[in-house]
Amino acid sequence: MLQQILDSVKIFQPEITLVIVLCAAILIDLIVKNKPQFIASIVMAGLFVAGYFVIQQSGVAVSIFSNMFVVDSFSVFFKVIILLTAIFVVMFSMQSKELNNGKRKLGEYYAFVISMTLGMLLMTGASNLLMMYLSIELTSLSSYILAGYKKETPDSSEASLKYIIYGAVSSGMLLYGISILYGLTGSLNIYDVNQVIQQGGVSLLALIAANLLMIVGFGFKISAVPFHFWTPDVYEGAPITITAFLSVASKAAGFALMIRYFFVGYYDPLASAINGYFTTIGGFDWHIIIAILSVATMTIGNFTAVWQNNLKRLLAYSSIAHAGYMMMGVVVLNNEGISAIMIYFATYLFMNLGAFYIVMLIADKIGSEDIDSYKGLGYKAPFMAVVFAIFLISLTGLPPTAGFIGKLYLFAALINSGWIWLAIVGVLNSVVSLYYYVRIFRNMFLRDIDIEHEPIKFSPSHFIVALLLVIPTLVLGLYFGPLVDFAQASVGILGIK
Image (cartoon, rainbow, N blue to C red; front, side):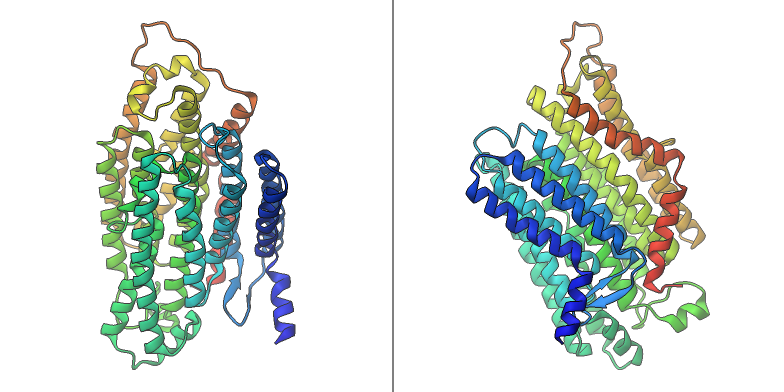
């Protein structure tokens, strides 16, 4: 047992690194007062070290801690997405006037960012139902506090309270689903669950009930309809840095967890070999349920975004719609569909973080997040306005940006698997999204063009971070071969043919 723990610890280096950084951030904050930039630097260094250890795990396929946690190429891909997002969020936080106003103690803020990142890394590799729940709770508890970090503003406190209430309900339903599954199979390990269900004798009705409850828990993390009600209020009330973090990293961890659960727990190798496509065990087809949720998520997200005037709230509904697009890959239930989700996440990271970053910079300068306040922005801050336009074009899915590549592979996976109607719904929803993004273009470049504009000035560090986000958004739209190869190689470890 001791040797097994020691061997597991050697593989667990990225997570151990984050635990050490978390403790260091707390201790340094107690010893060194009012030095948030120093703590942020320590946190940034820790994230890079954790990233180095994650890269070292490439090609590894091992189950550790008595099959509680899996380290494989699939989890490595999502860990890279999460750590990159965390690094950018720390950069945003160091530049945010919203946070660095001299009134807040930011030591614990960065500590919670690390604990949230740790929870999401654990979500990517959890192969035990109890481990899944604990990793979700670690992520959620940290995000509840961070969402209400602007406690002096009413909308922030309201956002945190709503987030906690919805989170508590979803956690309770997730636990109930886990308890039913444990009662049916006698195991919490999803590989063992798969074996027991394959042997037969499991009540189909109870299995359906358990998995519907599990879907509620997963749906909450990825902001899928109808479990999305917390998203707009939390995104609007939370600091923009945390809103960006939740919109990318939390969603990535949620999808990684959901994919591993369904693909490992309900994969029927014999039937899949006969049918030539992914087939689930248990006598129930999950494709149609995920398809319905996907259509509802992207449609409600896009059509509700049309009526929004607050940019954070608009991007919140846009984020809901993008969760719907990514769920289309889960509907396909094969290697092509899952690799398409992974490609989409890699592109979504840069374009969505970039959009929130520009909103943060403009809000810091003009004190507003309203679309009407962006009138004439193309003449006040031409570089930032053009960069923002590129991010919005990418979010729409138009060439030659990275967003086009993400949607291209998703739609191709759907068409190749015979889900043509779902691909058509996705394309029509993309047209709707173009409408509300065009509202922003119109205000930036076509409104107030005949009046004198006072330039908005930004520091060199602002331009550097903006370039770090916009360059990959353009490059991945033209040169995406290595990303596709990385995603396709990463999904194969799940053993799905």
